Image (cartoon, rainbow, N blue to C red; front, top):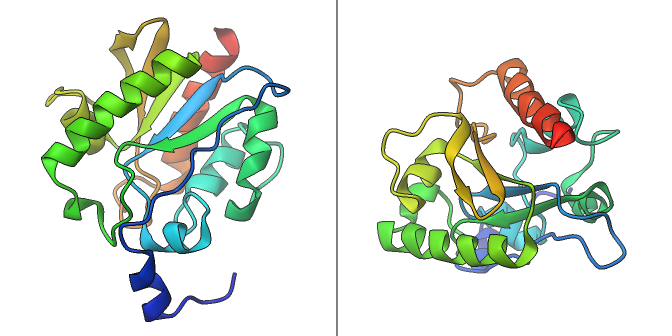
Length: 186
């Protein structure tokens, strides 16, 4: 991916990204991954988890969700695997802490509506802080949650951002792999 200029990144601020969701000819939605919000690199490129250093794509592959390491530009291949991507808050920012609590709560409402429409087996919220704010669950921890959205089970995953240094790549692969196994069994 060519390096983006500061002007290109700033021009991407406040943009939104389209969700990656299976179409009518794809398998049903097994897991819907929900990020916090698009970063500027993602908004500029139109691809989720596109910032260099983000570990989402390596973790998906390492945990067995994808048969090979996908590039962010190949995100549409997730549809054929029964996987999707959305964001809690749609507005692109340089850092997630630029979002307001109101945006996170509104994102939770939007997410409830999307899950009701698409009915994934699992909603995987990528980032415990986002889950806590949007679902009013201040004590939530990484892992499967007791709460459900209709028939959809919820799993909170560690945020794959390179800024989330207290989760190693190996530990993230293990946690995402636990979800993959649960999704295969359901």
